Amino acid sequence: MQIKTPKAAFCYKCVMRAALSRLRLALLVICACLLVRPALASVSMPTPLEFGVAVEAGNTLAVKKWLAAGLPPDFVGDRFGSGLMIGAWIGNLEIMALFHTAGANVNFMNRYGERALQLAAWRGHADIVRWLLERGAEVNRAGKQWNALHYAAFAGHADIVRLLVEKGADVNARTPNGSTALMMTAREGQEDVARLLMEAGADPATENEWGENALTWAMRHKHFRIARMITSPEEFAQAVKAPPGTYGKAVKSVAAPPEIDAVLEKLRQAQAEGKSTAALRKALLAAIALHRYDSEVSTIETKRGKKGKPEVLVITAKRNEAGSERAELLFEAVRAGAALTTPAEVAGSDGGPSEISSILERIRNEKGKKRSAAELRQALHEAVAKFKQDAQGAAPASSEPAAK
Image 1 (cartoon, rainbow, N blue to C red):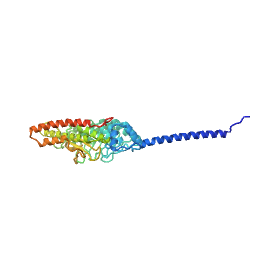
Image 2 (image 1 turned 180 degrees about the vertical axis):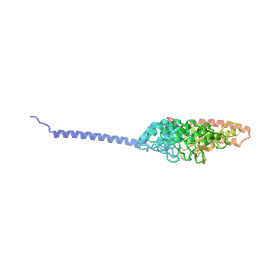
Image 3 (image 1 turned 90 degrees about the vertical axis):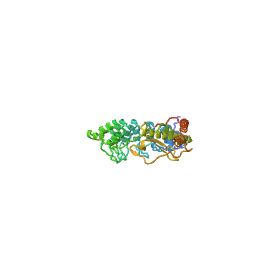
C-alpha cells in the first residue's frame, strides 16, 4: 500500500523553513545595526575651525564621516561659509558634490552676504560656476547687493563674466554703495571685461551714492583706454583736459605679504589641531612689526621721490576666537573704493612684544647714534633670520596644504 503525504503537511514545513530564514535574516540585520551604530556615535562633530581646515585641505574622508553622523549639510566653517562654499572657493567639485548630495543649499549665504557662486567667480573657477548654475544658483540678487558678476568683473575673469551674462546676469546690478560691474572694470583696468559688459548693455552713466560713474573711476586710475571706450570722443577729450585732482586720488589694495599669510595659515592649522600657538603668535607679531618698519621706510623714500609705495598693513583678530586672524595690505587703508573706518590690531597675543618689535623701537629711539644704529641693524637682520627659521619650524604637520 502506498501512503501519500498530505499536501497540507508539506506546505506547513515550507512555511516553517521560510519563517526561520526570515528570522535569521532579521537577526543578522539587527546585529549589523548594533555594530554600526556605536561607530557612528563615536564620530565627534567638528568645531567651525576644525571643519574649515579639513574641508579646505580636501579631506573627503572626514566630510563623509561627519555627514554620515548627522552633520548639517550647511554647517558653517570659521571662514568662507558652508562646506559647499568652501569647495567653491578652493575649486573642489568632489567636496561640493558631497555636501550637495546631503542637501546643502547652493544659495546659502555667509555672514558677509556672499554665496558660493560669488566665491567661485572671484577665484576664477569657471567649471564651479557652471556646476552651481546648473544646480539652481541664482545669478541675480534683489536690491543693492554684491553678486557674482561684480566679483568676476573686479577680478578680470572674462570667461566667467561671459557665462554669467549668457545666463541672464543683470549687467547694471548695483553693489550696496550703488556701484556697477562696469565701474569695477574701470577701477581695475579690466579692458576685455569692460568691452564685454558694454556689448551686453552696461550703462556707463550710472552713478553710485557718491555721484561717481565708470568714467570717474577710469580717469582716477589712469585707465584711459577704458575711459575712451565708455564715452563719446567729446566727453573723453573734456575729461583729459580736466584739472589735476578732478577725479580724486587713486587707491589700490593688494594681498598680504607671503610671510604673514603663511604664518596666519600655520596658526590656524595649529589651533584646529589643538597645538600650542605661542611660537606662531610671536612669529606673527614679528612679521607685522617688520612689515610696518619696511612700510615706514618705503613711505619716506616715496616722499623723497625715490622708489617705494606707502602701504598700510591691516590685521584683524578677535580675542579667544580661534582662526579669526586676517591680514591684508591696503594702500591708505582703502579697499574697493570704500574707506575702512575701524582700525584693526592683533589681539590675544601671548608672550609680550616680539624681539623684532623691541629692536625697531630701539632704532626709533636712538636716531642719530651711528654706532648704535649699526649694531641695531645687525641685530635686526639676525632677529629676522631667526623669525623665519622659527616660523618654518613651528608649522604643524599636515597631509595636504590647504588651498588658498
